[in-house]
Amino acid sequence: MSTGSPVLPPATATTNNNLFAAVDIGTNSFKLTVVRVDPSSGRFLTFNRLKEPVILGLDTTTTSSAPTISAASLDRAITAVRKFQHFIHSHRLPPSHLRLVATSAVREASNKSQFIGAVNEALGLNVEVISGEEEARLIYLGILQFFPVFTSTVLTIDIGGGSTEFTVGLNGNVLFSKSLRLGHVTLTQQFSDVTKMREHIRSELEASDLIGKINDFKIDAVIGSSGTIRAIEKAVCKGYARKIEENVGVFEEFTKREWRFTRHELRCLVERLYDEESEINGKAKRSRFFKKRAAFILAGTVLLDEVFEKLAIEEIEVSEYALGEGVITEMLGHAFQGFDLNANARWRSVFKLAMRFNNKKRMKAATMCATIAREIFEGLMKSNQLYNGNDDNQLYVPLDDSDLEYLDAASLLHNIGMSTGKKGYHKQSYFVIMNGDELQAYSKEEIKIIALLVRYHRKKFPKNDVLEGSSKEVRQKFRILCAIMRVSYAVQQCLPVNFQFMGFIHSPEGFKLVLSEGEARNQSTDIVHPLLAGDMNVLMEKEFEHFSMVLKQKLSILVT
Image 1 (cartoon, rainbow, N blue to C red):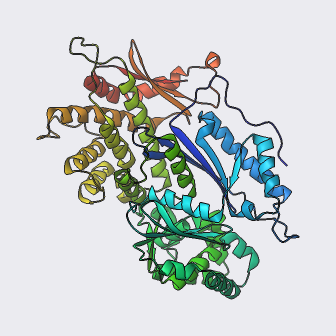
Image 2 (cartoon, helix red, strand yellow):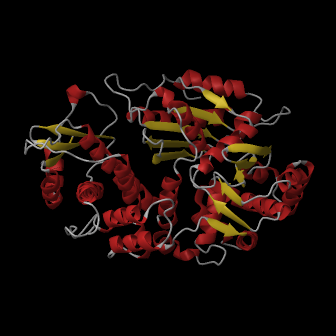
Image 3 (cartoon, rainbow, N blue to C red):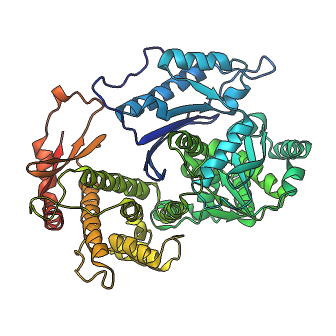
Protein backbone atom coordinates (compact mmCIF):
# COMPACT_ATOMS: atom_id res chain seq x y z
CA MET A 1 0.00 0.00 0.00
CA SER A 2 1.18 3.52 -0.73
CA THR A 3 2.32 5.36 2.35
CA GLY A 4 3.69 8.75 3.12
CA SER A 5 2.54 12.11 4.39
CA PRO A 6 -0.19 14.13 2.71
CA VAL A 7 0.98 16.49 0.00
CA LEU A 8 0.86 20.01 1.43
CA PRO A 9 0.77 23.25 -0.55
CA PRO A 10 3.81 25.54 -0.39
CA ALA A 11 3.82 27.64 2.77
CA THR A 12 4.09 30.88 0.83
CA ALA A 13 1.32 30.06 -1.64
CA THR A 14 -1.87 32.10 -1.74
CA THR A 15 -5.09 30.36 -2.70
CA ASN A 16 -6.72 30.68 -6.10
CA ASN A 17 -10.33 31.30 -5.11
CA ASN A 18 -11.64 31.06 -8.68
CA LEU A 19 -10.69 27.37 -9.04
CA PHE A 20 -12.98 24.50 -8.03
CA ALA A 21 -12.30 20.78 -8.43
CA ALA A 22 -14.00 17.41 -8.12
CA VAL A 23 -12.57 13.90 -8.04
CA ASP A 24 -14.82 11.13 -9.37
CA ILE A 25 -13.67 7.83 -7.89
CA GLY A 26 -15.23 5.40 -10.32
CA THR A 27 -15.07 1.68 -10.96
CA ASN A 28 -13.04 1.96 -14.16
CA SER A 29 -11.10 5.19 -13.67
CA PHE A 30 -10.49 8.12 -11.35
CA LYS A 31 -11.14 11.54 -12.89
CA LEU A 32 -10.10 14.98 -11.69
CA THR A 33 -12.02 17.95 -13.11
CA VAL A 34 -10.77 21.48 -12.38
CA VAL A 35 -12.75 24.54 -13.48
CA ARG A 36 -12.15 28.28 -13.40
CA VAL A 37 -15.22 30.19 -12.26
CA ASP A 38 -16.42 33.71 -13.01
CA PRO A 39 -17.64 34.83 -9.55
CA SER A 40 -19.98 37.44 -11.01
CA SER A 41 -22.03 34.93 -13.02
CA GLY A 42 -21.08 31.45 -11.82
CA ARG A 43 -20.07 30.67 -15.41
CA PHE A 44 -17.25 28.15 -15.47
CA LEU A 45 -14.75 26.85 -17.98
CA THR A 46 -12.83 23.60 -17.64
CA PHE A 47 -9.28 24.47 -16.61
CA ASN A 48 -7.89 20.94 -16.79
CA ARG A 49 -8.83 17.28 -16.61
CA LEU A 50 -6.71 14.40 -15.35
CA LYS A 51 -7.61 10.74 -15.56
CA GLU A 52 -6.06 7.63 -14.04
CA PRO A 53 -7.20 4.11 -15.17
CA VAL A 54 -7.28 2.58 -11.70
CA ILE A 55 -9.98 -0.08 -12.42
CA LEU A 56 -10.90 -0.70 -8.80
CA GLY A 57 -12.85 -3.81 -9.69
CA LEU A 58 -10.04 -5.40 -11.71
CA ASP A 59 -8.82 -7.71 -8.97
CA THR A 60 -11.58 -7.53 -6.36
CA THR A 61 -12.21 -10.62 -4.31
CA THR A 62 -15.73 -11.97 -3.72
CA THR A 63 -15.31 -14.37 -0.82
CA SER A 64 -18.15 -12.57 1.00
CA SER A 65 -21.58 -11.52 -0.21
CA ALA A 66 -20.11 -8.16 -1.29
CA PRO A 67 -16.92 -7.62 -3.34
CA THR A 68 -13.77 -6.58 -1.51
CA ILE A 69 -11.33 -3.99 -2.87
CA SER A 70 -7.93 -5.68 -2.95
CA ALA A 71 -4.72 -4.28 -1.48
CA ALA A 72 -3.37 -3.81 -5.03
CA SER A 73 -6.43 -1.80 -6.05
CA LEU A 74 -6.17 0.33 -2.92
CA ASP A 75 -2.51 0.99 -3.67
CA ARG A 76 -3.36 2.11 -7.23
CA ALA A 77 -6.14 4.29 -5.86
CA ILE A 78 -3.90 6.16 -3.42
CA THR A 79 -1.23 6.62 -6.09
CA ALA A 80 -3.80 8.12 -8.47
CA VAL A 81 -5.30 10.49 -5.90
CA ARG A 82 -1.81 11.57 -4.82
CA LYS A 83 -1.12 12.66 -8.41
CA PHE A 84 -4.33 14.67 -8.36
CA GLN A 85 -3.34 16.20 -5.04
CA HIS A 86 0.02 17.36 -6.41
CA PHE A 87 -1.75 19.06 -9.31
CA ILE A 88 -4.34 20.68 -7.03
CA HIS A 89 -1.74 22.08 -4.64
CA SER A 90 0.47 23.32 -7.47
CA HIS A 91 -2.44 25.51 -8.60
CA ARG A 92 -3.21 26.73 -5.05
CA LEU A 93 -6.79 25.50 -4.96
CA PRO A 94 -8.49 26.16 -1.59
CA PRO A 95 -9.28 22.95 0.36
CA SER A 96 -12.95 23.95 0.61
CA HIS A 97 -13.15 24.05 -3.21
CA LEU A 98 -12.36 20.33 -3.54
CA ARG A 99 -14.74 17.40 -3.19
CA LEU A 100 -14.04 13.68 -3.68
CA VAL A 101 -16.96 11.33 -4.38
CA ALA A 102 -16.85 7.56 -4.72
CA THR A 103 -19.40 5.60 -6.72
CA SER A 104 -20.33 1.97 -7.38
CA ALA A 105 -17.07 0.08 -6.72
CA VAL A 106 -16.54 1.64 -3.29
CA ARG A 107 -20.27 1.83 -2.55
CA GLU A 108 -20.69 -1.95 -3.00
CA ALA A 109 -17.39 -2.98 -1.36
CA SER A 110 -17.45 -4.80 1.96
CA ASN A 111 -14.32 -2.88 3.03
CA LYS A 112 -15.36 0.63 1.94
CA SER A 113 -14.60 1.98 5.44
CA GLN A 114 -11.04 0.69 5.12
CA PHE A 115 -10.77 2.38 1.70
CA ILE A 116 -11.98 5.73 3.06
CA GLY A 117 -9.68 5.49 6.08
CA ALA A 118 -6.63 4.57 4.00
CA VAL A 119 -7.06 7.55 1.66
CA ASN A 120 -7.55 9.89 4.61
CA GLU A 121 -4.53 8.53 6.47
CA ALA A 122 -2.22 8.65 3.45
CA LEU A 123 -3.37 11.94 1.93
CA GLY A 124 -5.47 13.78 4.48
CA LEU A 125 -8.47 13.83 2.14
CA ASN A 126 -12.07 12.93 2.87
CA VAL A 127 -13.89 10.65 0.41
CA GLU A 128 -17.70 10.76 0.25
CA VAL A 129 -19.43 7.54 -0.78
CA ILE A 130 -22.60 8.62 -2.55
CA SER A 131 -25.71 6.54 -3.21
CA GLY A 132 -26.77 5.60 -6.71
CA GLU A 133 -29.68 8.05 -6.53
CA GLU A 134 -27.40 10.88 -5.40
CA GLU A 135 -24.99 10.02 -8.20
CA ALA A 136 -27.86 10.23 -10.70
CA ARG A 137 -28.94 13.63 -9.32
CA LEU A 138 -25.43 15.08 -9.56
CA ILE A 139 -25.03 13.77 -13.11
CA TYR A 140 -28.26 15.59 -14.04
CA LEU A 141 -26.88 18.83 -12.54
CA GLY A 142 -23.72 18.40 -14.61
CA ILE A 143 -25.67 17.81 -17.82
CA LEU A 144 -27.69 20.98 -17.19
CA GLN A 145 -24.43 22.92 -17.45
CA PHE A 146 -23.75 21.49 -20.92
CA PHE A 147 -27.21 21.45 -22.52
CA PRO A 148 -29.81 24.25 -22.27
CA VAL A 149 -32.57 21.83 -21.23
CA PHE A 150 -33.52 23.32 -17.87
CA THR A 151 -37.21 23.69 -18.81
CA SER A 152 -37.42 20.35 -20.66
CA THR A 153 -38.31 16.95 -19.24
CA VAL A 154 -35.13 14.98 -19.90
CA LEU A 155 -34.07 11.41 -19.34
CA THR A 156 -30.36 11.12 -18.55
CA ILE A 157 -28.43 7.85 -18.85
CA ASP A 158 -24.92 7.40 -17.45
CA ILE A 159 -23.14 4.06 -17.92
CA GLY A 160 -20.39 3.55 -15.37
CA GLY A 161 -18.05 0.69 -14.65
CA GLY A 162 -20.23 -0.85 -11.95
CA SER A 163 -23.67 0.71 -12.36
CA THR A 164 -25.89 2.68 -14.70
CA GLU A 165 -27.79 5.74 -13.49
CA PHE A 166 -31.14 6.87 -14.92
CA THR A 167 -32.71 10.23 -14.08
CA VAL A 168 -35.80 12.12 -15.21
CA GLY A 169 -35.43 15.82 -14.47
CA LEU A 170 -37.29 19.09 -15.04
CA ASN A 171 -36.45 22.67 -13.98
CA GLY A 172 -33.41 21.46 -12.06
CA ASN A 173 -35.47 19.02 -9.98
CA VAL A 174 -35.20 15.23 -10.08
CA LEU A 175 -38.60 13.68 -10.79
CA PHE A 176 -37.33 10.10 -10.79
CA SER A 177 -33.96 8.37 -10.46
CA LYS A 178 -32.81 4.79 -10.46
CA SER A 179 -29.43 3.13 -10.19
CA LEU A 180 -29.04 -0.39 -11.60
CA ARG A 181 -26.07 -2.64 -10.90
CA LEU A 182 -25.23 -2.92 -14.57
CA GLY A 183 -21.81 -1.57 -15.55
CA HIS A 184 -19.44 -2.14 -18.43
CA VAL A 185 -16.63 -3.44 -16.17
CA THR A 186 -18.77 -5.80 -14.09
CA LEU A 187 -20.61 -7.12 -17.15
CA THR A 188 -17.30 -7.82 -18.90
CA GLN A 189 -16.04 -9.69 -15.85
CA GLN A 190 -19.23 -11.71 -15.37
CA PHE A 191 -20.00 -12.71 -18.98
CA SER A 192 -17.78 -13.89 -21.80
CA ASP A 193 -20.85 -14.94 -23.80
CA VAL A 194 -22.71 -11.93 -25.22
CA THR A 195 -26.02 -13.81 -25.46
CA LYS A 196 -25.95 -14.55 -21.74
CA MET A 197 -24.92 -10.95 -21.08
CA ARG A 198 -27.97 -9.73 -23.00
CA GLU A 199 -30.28 -12.09 -21.09
CA HIS A 200 -28.92 -10.80 -17.78
CA ILE A 201 -29.35 -7.15 -18.81
CA ARG A 202 -32.94 -7.78 -19.94
CA SER A 203 -33.72 -9.59 -16.71
CA GLU A 204 -32.39 -6.72 -14.59
CA LEU A 205 -34.27 -4.10 -16.62
CA GLU A 206 -37.53 -6.03 -16.43
CA ALA A 207 -37.20 -6.83 -12.72
CA SER A 208 -36.77 -3.16 -11.84
CA ASP A 209 -39.58 -0.62 -11.99
CA LEU A 210 -37.47 1.49 -14.37
CA ILE A 211 -39.33 0.99 -17.66
CA GLY A 212 -42.82 1.59 -16.30
CA LYS A 213 -41.73 4.61 -14.25
CA ILE A 214 -39.96 6.31 -17.17
CA ASN A 215 -42.88 5.60 -19.53
CA ASP A 216 -45.11 7.58 -17.15
CA PHE A 217 -43.30 10.76 -18.25
CA LYS A 218 -43.46 12.63 -21.54
CA ILE A 219 -39.74 12.77 -22.29
CA ASP A 220 -38.58 15.74 -24.40
CA ALA A 221 -34.97 14.59 -24.82
CA VAL A 222 -32.70 11.68 -23.92
CA ILE A 223 -29.16 12.65 -22.94
CA GLY A 224 -26.27 10.29 -22.29
CA SER A 225 -23.08 10.95 -20.37
CA SER A 226 -20.02 9.03 -19.19
CA GLY A 227 -16.93 7.86 -21.03
CA THR A 228 -18.67 4.83 -22.52
CA ILE A 229 -21.43 6.80 -24.23
CA ARG A 230 -18.96 9.46 -25.38
CA ALA A 231 -16.77 6.71 -26.83
CA ILE A 232 -19.77 5.31 -28.71
CA GLU A 233 -20.59 8.76 -30.13
CA LYS A 234 -16.98 9.22 -31.18
CA ALA A 235 -16.96 5.82 -32.92
CA VAL A 236 -20.17 6.72 -34.77
CA CYS A 237 -18.83 10.15 -35.71
CA LYS A 238 -15.55 8.81 -37.04
CA GLY A 239 -17.07 5.98 -39.03
CA TYR A 240 -15.84 3.06 -36.94
CA ALA A 241 -18.91 0.98 -37.80
CA ARG A 242 -18.30 1.74 -41.50
CA LYS A 243 -14.70 0.53 -41.15
CA ILE A 244 -13.09 3.82 -42.15
CA GLU A 245 -11.35 4.37 -38.84
CA GLU A 246 -8.01 3.73 -40.56
CA ASN A 247 -8.18 7.44 -41.34
CA VAL A 248 -8.67 8.25 -37.68
CA GLY A 249 -5.89 10.85 -37.71
CA VAL A 250 -7.58 12.74 -40.52
CA PHE A 251 -10.98 12.40 -38.87
CA GLU A 252 -9.65 13.52 -35.50
CA GLU A 253 -8.35 16.68 -37.14
CA PHE A 254 -11.22 17.66 -39.40
CA THR A 255 -14.45 15.86 -38.41
CA LYS A 256 -17.00 17.90 -36.47
CA ARG A 257 -18.83 16.25 -33.59
CA GLU A 258 -22.62 16.18 -33.66
CA TRP A 259 -22.82 14.98 -30.02
CA ARG A 260 -25.72 12.64 -30.85
CA PHE A 261 -26.37 9.27 -32.47
CA THR A 262 -29.38 7.24 -33.49
CA ARG A 263 -30.64 3.77 -32.64
CA HIS A 264 -29.64 2.59 -36.13
CA GLU A 265 -26.10 3.95 -35.74
CA LEU A 266 -25.76 2.24 -32.36
CA ARG A 267 -26.95 -1.06 -33.83
CA CYS A 268 -24.39 -0.79 -36.66
CA LEU A 269 -21.63 -0.31 -34.10
CA VAL A 270 -22.83 -3.32 -32.08
CA GLU A 271 -22.68 -5.46 -35.22
CA ARG A 272 -19.17 -4.24 -36.01
CA LEU A 273 -18.00 -5.11 -32.50
CA TYR A 274 -19.65 -8.52 -32.81
CA ASP A 275 -17.80 -9.19 -36.06
CA GLU A 276 -14.48 -8.24 -34.48
CA GLU A 277 -14.82 -11.06 -31.97
CA SER A 278 -14.20 -13.59 -34.77
CA GLU A 279 -11.75 -11.53 -36.86
CA ILE A 280 -8.04 -12.26 -36.60
CA ASN A 281 -7.06 -8.62 -36.15
CA GLY A 282 -10.44 -7.48 -34.84
CA LYS A 283 -9.49 -6.89 -31.23
CA ALA A 284 -6.21 -5.25 -32.25
CA LYS A 285 -8.16 -2.71 -34.34
CA ARG A 286 -10.49 -2.15 -31.42
CA SER A 287 -7.58 -1.48 -29.09
CA ARG A 288 -6.06 1.07 -31.46
CA PHE A 289 -9.32 3.00 -31.66
CA PHE A 290 -10.80 2.67 -28.15
CA LYS A 291 -7.45 2.36 -26.35
CA LYS A 292 -7.89 1.59 -22.61
CA ARG A 293 -11.66 1.38 -22.99
CA ALA A 294 -11.35 -1.39 -25.61
CA ALA A 295 -11.72 -4.24 -23.11
CA PHE A 296 -15.10 -2.95 -21.90
CA ILE A 297 -16.63 -1.21 -24.93
CA LEU A 298 -18.54 -4.26 -26.17
CA ALA A 299 -20.33 -4.67 -22.82
CA GLY A 300 -21.14 -0.97 -22.67
CA THR A 301 -22.49 -0.94 -26.22
CA VAL A 302 -24.62 -4.05 -25.68
CA LEU A 303 -26.00 -2.58 -22.46
CA LEU A 304 -27.00 0.67 -24.18
CA ASP A 305 -28.51 -1.28 -27.08
CA GLU A 306 -30.78 -3.16 -24.66
CA VAL A 307 -31.75 0.10 -22.92
CA PHE A 308 -32.65 1.64 -26.31
CA GLU A 309 -34.77 -1.42 -27.10
CA LYS A 310 -36.67 -1.50 -23.80
CA LEU A 311 -37.34 2.25 -23.68
CA ALA A 312 -37.93 2.64 -27.44
CA ILE A 313 -35.24 5.33 -27.72
CA GLU A 314 -34.59 6.47 -31.29
CA GLU A 315 -31.90 9.11 -30.67
CA ILE A 316 -29.69 10.20 -27.81
CA GLU A 317 -27.74 13.42 -27.32
CA VAL A 318 -24.35 13.19 -25.64
CA SER A 319 -23.07 15.45 -22.88
CA GLU A 320 -19.42 16.21 -22.28
CA TYR A 321 -20.34 17.04 -18.69
CA ALA A 322 -21.35 14.46 -16.10
CA LEU A 323 -20.74 13.64 -12.44
CA GLY A 324 -17.63 15.79 -11.90
CA GLU A 325 -19.29 18.92 -13.25
CA GLY A 326 -22.42 18.14 -11.24
CA VAL A 327 -20.40 17.98 -8.03
CA ILE A 328 -18.77 21.30 -8.91
CA THR A 329 -22.15 22.85 -9.77
CA GLU A 330 -23.43 21.96 -6.32
CA MET A 331 -20.33 23.47 -4.71
CA LEU A 332 -20.93 26.69 -6.67
CA GLY A 333 -24.49 26.76 -5.38
CA HIS A 334 -23.10 26.86 -1.82
CA ALA A 335 -20.25 29.26 -2.62
CA PHE A 336 -22.21 31.88 -4.58
CA GLN A 337 -25.44 33.19 -3.13
CA GLY A 338 -28.28 33.14 -5.64
CA PHE A 339 -26.49 30.80 -8.04
CA ASP A 340 -28.96 29.93 -10.82
CA LEU A 341 -28.75 26.54 -12.54
CA ASN A 342 -30.29 28.07 -15.66
CA ALA A 343 -28.36 31.35 -15.68
CA ASN A 344 -25.79 30.26 -18.22
CA ALA A 345 -27.83 29.14 -21.23
CA ARG A 346 -25.88 31.58 -23.40
CA TRP A 347 -22.56 30.25 -22.20
CA ARG A 348 -23.63 26.64 -22.69
CA SER A 349 -24.45 27.34 -26.32
CA VAL A 350 -20.93 28.75 -26.78
CA PHE A 351 -19.34 25.73 -25.15
CA LYS A 352 -21.45 23.28 -27.13
CA LEU A 353 -20.47 24.98 -30.40
CA ALA A 354 -16.79 24.79 -29.45
CA MET A 355 -17.10 21.11 -28.54
CA ARG A 356 -18.90 20.36 -31.80
CA PHE A 357 -16.00 21.52 -33.98
CA ASN A 358 -12.93 21.11 -31.77
CA ASN A 359 -11.07 17.95 -30.85
CA LYS A 360 -9.37 17.65 -27.47
CA LYS A 361 -6.12 19.25 -28.61
CA ARG A 362 -7.81 22.30 -30.10
CA MET A 363 -10.19 22.55 -27.15
CA LYS A 364 -7.24 22.62 -24.77
CA ALA A 365 -5.60 25.39 -26.82
CA ALA A 366 -8.85 27.37 -26.85
CA THR A 367 -9.24 26.98 -23.09
CA MET A 368 -5.67 28.15 -22.53
CA CYS A 369 -6.28 31.17 -24.76
CA ALA A 370 -9.40 32.00 -22.70
CA THR A 371 -7.44 31.63 -19.44
CA ILE A 372 -4.75 34.06 -20.59
CA ALA A 373 -7.30 36.54 -21.96
CA ARG A 374 -9.26 36.50 -18.71
CA GLU A 375 -6.09 37.10 -16.68
CA ILE A 376 -5.24 40.15 -18.80
CA PHE A 377 -8.83 41.44 -18.68
CA GLU A 378 -9.07 41.11 -14.91
CA GLY A 379 -5.61 42.65 -14.50
CA LEU A 380 -6.70 45.69 -16.47
CA MET A 381 -9.86 46.01 -14.41
CA LYS A 382 -7.94 45.78 -11.14
CA SER A 383 -5.29 48.25 -12.17
CA ASN A 384 -5.55 51.54 -10.36
CA GLN A 385 -3.93 53.26 -13.33
CA LEU A 386 -7.26 54.43 -14.73
CA TYR A 387 -7.61 57.33 -17.12
CA ASN A 388 -9.37 60.32 -15.59
CA GLY A 389 -9.16 62.60 -18.61
CA ASN A 390 -6.27 64.63 -17.22
CA ASP A 391 -3.27 62.34 -17.35
CA ASP A 392 -2.08 60.95 -20.66
CA ASN A 393 -0.15 58.22 -18.85
CA GLN A 394 -3.32 56.79 -17.37
CA LEU A 395 -5.99 54.77 -19.07
CA TYR A 396 -9.67 54.32 -18.47
CA VAL A 397 -10.90 50.88 -19.50
CA PRO A 398 -14.71 51.05 -19.92
CA LEU A 399 -15.26 47.30 -19.66
CA ASP A 400 -17.85 45.27 -17.77
CA ASP A 401 -18.93 41.66 -17.22
CA SER A 402 -20.64 41.48 -20.63
CA ASP A 403 -17.36 42.34 -22.31
CA LEU A 404 -15.63 39.57 -20.40
CA GLU A 405 -18.30 37.16 -21.62
CA TYR A 406 -17.66 38.21 -25.25
CA LEU A 407 -13.91 37.73 -24.72
CA ASP A 408 -14.43 34.28 -23.14
CA ALA A 409 -16.70 33.23 -26.00
CA ALA A 410 -14.33 34.46 -28.72
CA SER A 411 -11.36 32.74 -27.06
CA LEU A 412 -13.22 29.46 -26.86
CA LEU A 413 -14.43 29.68 -30.49
CA HIS A 414 -11.40 31.21 -32.19
CA ASN A 415 -10.15 27.95 -33.71
CA ILE A 416 -13.38 26.12 -34.64
CA GLY A 417 -12.64 26.88 -38.30
CA MET A 418 -9.73 24.43 -38.15
CA SER A 419 -12.27 21.64 -38.62
CA THR A 420 -11.98 22.33 -42.38
CA GLY A 421 -8.24 23.07 -42.46
CA LYS A 422 -5.66 25.41 -40.97
CA LYS A 423 -5.30 27.87 -43.83
CA GLY A 424 -7.46 30.92 -43.20
CA TYR A 425 -9.24 29.14 -40.36
CA HIS A 426 -9.98 32.43 -38.56
CA LYS A 427 -12.19 33.47 -41.47
CA GLN A 428 -13.98 30.11 -41.41
CA SER A 429 -14.51 30.45 -37.65
CA TYR A 430 -16.06 33.88 -38.26
CA PHE A 431 -18.34 32.42 -40.93
CA VAL A 432 -19.59 29.60 -38.68
CA ILE A 433 -20.42 31.99 -35.84
CA MET A 434 -22.17 34.51 -38.07
CA ASN A 435 -24.16 32.00 -40.12
CA GLY A 436 -24.58 28.93 -37.92
CA ASP A 437 -27.47 30.14 -35.72
CA GLU A 438 -25.79 28.27 -32.84
CA LEU A 439 -25.39 30.95 -30.17
CA GLN A 440 -28.57 31.15 -28.14
CA ALA A 441 -29.95 34.26 -26.39
CA TYR A 442 -27.31 36.59 -27.92
CA SER A 443 -28.39 39.67 -29.86
CA LYS A 444 -27.22 40.17 -33.46
CA GLU A 445 -24.78 42.86 -32.34
CA GLU A 446 -23.34 40.61 -29.61
CA ILE A 447 -22.85 37.74 -32.08
CA LYS A 448 -21.15 40.14 -34.49
CA ILE A 449 -18.77 41.37 -31.77
CA ILE A 450 -17.81 37.77 -30.86
CA ALA A 451 -17.41 36.82 -34.53
CA LEU A 452 -15.23 39.87 -35.28
CA LEU A 453 -13.00 39.18 -32.27
CA VAL A 454 -12.51 35.69 -33.71
CA ARG A 455 -11.94 37.05 -37.23
CA TYR A 456 -9.21 39.48 -36.09
CA HIS A 457 -7.44 37.40 -33.44
CA ARG A 458 -4.57 36.86 -35.93
CA LYS A 459 -3.16 38.14 -39.22
CA LYS A 460 -4.59 41.56 -40.21
CA PHE A 461 -5.48 44.16 -37.61
CA PRO A 462 -9.09 45.39 -37.66
CA LYS A 463 -9.85 48.61 -39.51
CA ASN A 464 -11.46 51.57 -37.75
CA ASP A 465 -14.78 51.03 -39.53
CA VAL A 466 -15.09 47.34 -38.62
CA LEU A 467 -18.11 48.06 -36.39
CA GLU A 468 -19.50 50.94 -38.40
CA GLY A 469 -22.95 51.88 -37.17
CA SER A 470 -22.22 50.92 -33.56
CA SER A 471 -21.75 53.48 -30.81
CA LYS A 472 -18.35 55.02 -30.06
CA GLU A 473 -18.23 53.17 -26.74
CA VAL A 474 -18.88 49.79 -28.40
CA ARG A 475 -16.13 50.44 -30.97
CA GLN A 476 -13.68 51.48 -28.22
CA LYS A 477 -14.45 48.37 -26.20
CA PHE A 478 -14.02 46.20 -29.27
CA ARG A 479 -10.54 47.60 -29.95
CA ILE A 480 -9.47 46.85 -26.37
CA LEU A 481 -10.94 43.33 -26.41
CA CYS A 482 -9.30 42.66 -29.77
CA ALA A 483 -5.90 43.75 -28.43
CA ILE A 484 -6.33 41.39 -25.45
CA MET A 485 -7.47 38.58 -27.72
CA ARG A 486 -4.50 38.92 -30.09
CA VAL A 487 -1.94 38.94 -27.27
CA SER A 488 -3.62 35.95 -25.57
CA TYR A 489 -3.62 33.90 -28.77
CA ALA A 490 0.02 34.80 -29.49
CA VAL A 491 1.15 33.89 -25.98
CA GLN A 492 -0.73 30.59 -26.16
CA GLN A 493 0.97 29.80 -29.48
CA CYS A 494 4.55 30.41 -28.36
CA LEU A 495 4.61 29.51 -24.68
CA PRO A 496 8.14 28.15 -24.09
CA VAL A 497 7.23 26.32 -20.89
CA ASN A 498 4.35 24.37 -19.46
CA PHE A 499 3.61 27.13 -16.98
CA GLN A 500 1.48 26.66 -13.87
CA PHE A 501 1.08 30.20 -12.56
CA MET A 502 0.12 33.41 -14.24
CA GLY A 503 -0.44 37.00 -13.23
CA PHE A 504 -1.00 40.37 -14.85
CA ILE A 505 0.53 43.30 -13.00
CA HIS A 506 1.15 46.99 -13.51
CA SER A 507 4.52 48.61 -12.96
CA PRO A 508 6.06 52.01 -13.75
CA GLU A 509 7.26 50.48 -17.04
CA GLY A 510 3.75 49.38 -17.99
CA PHE A 511 1.87 46.10 -17.82
CA LYS A 512 3.61 42.75 -17.36
CA LEU A 513 2.20 39.29 -18.01
CA VAL A 514 4.06 37.07 -15.55
CA LEU A 515 4.33 33.35 -16.30
CA SER A 516 5.83 30.96 -13.76
CA GLU A 517 6.84 27.33 -14.04
CA GLY A 518 7.37 24.63 -11.43
CA GLU A 519 5.33 23.35 -8.52
CA ALA A 520 6.59 25.61 -5.78
CA ARG A 521 6.33 29.37 -5.45
CA ASN A 522 9.06 30.29 -3.03
CA GLN A 523 9.65 33.93 -3.87
CA SER A 524 13.13 33.88 -2.41
CA THR A 525 14.21 31.28 -4.97
CA ASP A 526 12.43 32.56 -8.10
CA ILE A 527 14.79 32.52 -11.06
CA VAL A 528 14.14 34.73 -14.07
CA HIS A 529 14.76 33.22 -17.50
CA PRO A 530 15.49 36.36 -19.54
CA LEU A 531 16.18 34.44 -22.74
CA LEU A 532 12.75 32.81 -22.72
CA ALA A 533 10.97 36.04 -21.92
CA GLY A 534 13.13 37.90 -24.41
CA ASP A 535 12.39 35.43 -27.20
CA MET A 536 8.69 35.78 -26.58
CA ASN A 537 8.91 39.55 -26.55
CA VAL A 538 10.69 39.51 -29.92
CA LEU A 539 8.21 37.10 -31.46
CA MET A 540 5.28 39.18 -30.22
CA GLU A 541 6.68 42.61 -30.98
CA LYS A 542 3.87 43.58 -33.40
CA GLU A 543 1.19 42.50 -30.95
CA PHE A 544 2.83 44.49 -28.17
CA GLU A 545 2.95 47.57 -30.40
CA HIS A 546 -0.74 47.19 -31.19
CA PHE A 547 -1.60 46.67 -27.50
CA SER A 548 0.40 49.80 -26.58
CA MET A 549 -1.33 51.84 -29.27
CA VAL A 550 -4.80 50.81 -28.08
CA LEU A 551 -4.28 50.88 -24.32
CA LYS A 552 -1.61 53.62 -24.14
CA GLN A 553 0.55 51.37 -21.98
CA LYS A 554 3.51 49.13 -22.75
CA LEU A 555 3.19 45.37 -22.31
CA SER A 556 5.94 42.81 -21.76
CA ILE A 557 6.22 39.19 -20.64
CA LEU A 558 8.23 37.91 -17.71
CA VAL A 559 8.88 34.17 -17.35
CA THR A 560 10.00 33.12 -13.86
